[in-house]
Length: 116
Image 1: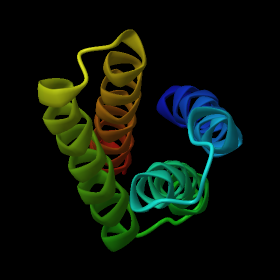
Image 2: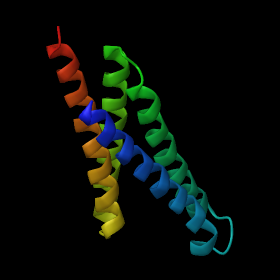
Image 3: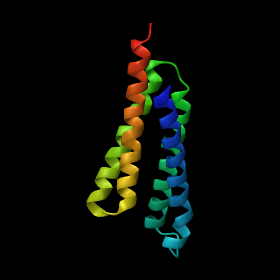
Image 4: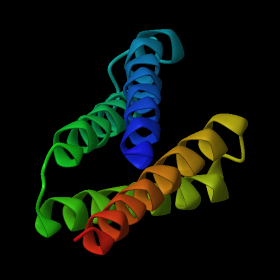
């Protein structure tokens, strides 16, 4: 139960991070270029992954937990790759956030498996 509360807080933070990313797009890019669209798409991906966690944590099955674990590990990996070209604090925040969500999903599944 505790992992679910932490995951919900992290997922909300993820939605806010993605929303900020989307909102900053017109400020960071004067014109709609391919770079601006990638920036916007990255924000949408962050929001979608965070929302998947909210939905996934309400799932009681193993598939749901494994799915959100995979999503979170993929997002953490993308943030790690982004660190190579953009070593900024917001990249660390995103990576830690999704790594934390992956750990919460694993912890919640382990707790559920241990219960009779």
